[in-house]
Amino acid sequence: MATLYNEKMAAIYDAMYQTFVDYDEEYTFYNNLLAANNCKTVLEIGSGTGNLAKRFSAHQMDYIGLDYSKSMIKIAQERNTTCPFIHGDMRDFNLDKKVDAIIITGRSTSYLTTNDDINETLNCLWNNLKKEAIIIFDFIDANRFIPFITHNKAIIHQAQYENVNYLRESNWETTDMENFMLEWNAKYYTIQNDEKELISNDFSTVRVFTLNEIQLFLYLNNFEITQTIDRKTYAYDTYVIVAKKKAKP
Ligand SMILES: C[S@@+](CC[C@H](N)C(=O)[O-])C[C@H]1O[C@@H](n2cnc3c(N)ncnc32)[C@H](O)[C@@H]1O
Image (cartoon, rainbow, N blue to C red; front, side, top):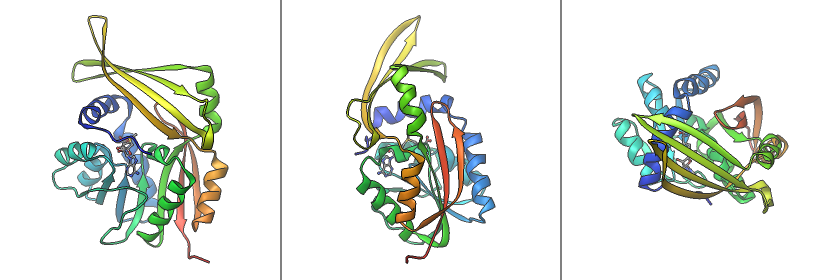
């Protein structure tokens, strides 16, 4: 299922996403939702290289990060020496103490490619939440993304970080559309004196979702949606869902 970010990819990811993503805005967005729901303790899944962790801990939030990639956690831990990070899989983890909120950030849901992956994850979230606690997660909207990549075969993103120019060329393959799964080939380059140098060639299988299927997955796993937010991120049209843990019938 998920791509494991190795050490080189984690460092490239960290450099490039600092310019793609406005992490201050990202923090404010999630923090406002957490505050509106009176959440005092939060687990971030897909905590990546710890950019949100840094902001949550600077604002004294009781925060834990969890990620599947050891290389991403290593960078996150160096960035946030006092924050706890768990190396784990969102489909199967056990926290020592249940939390008020679990957030899955930065479209990390895209790596849940099978229905089993999604059901296992939602079940696991349910088990690690306090009564009536909430989950917040985003996902790429299939209804907008699939037409977009059908018409735009190569998608270019450029970024500059610490005086290095980066370019990412994404190619999306839609031929095997089981579960709206897509093959994503991302080529990362540095650019110096107008010369492109390939630094990494990354292949991953990701899944995009329709809002309807997410609604049904949540219903079947005992969550009640309280908010659906249509949100454009740097490259994707996403929905963000806020849902409350319900008692099992
Ligand atoms: C696109 S990155 C987003 C990172 C971060 N939220 C950000 O916005 O910069 C997706 C992250 O999800 C993690 N991930 C993928 N599958 C996972 C799984 N099954 N359990 C936990 N983390 C996972 C990856 O290792 C990666 O760090």
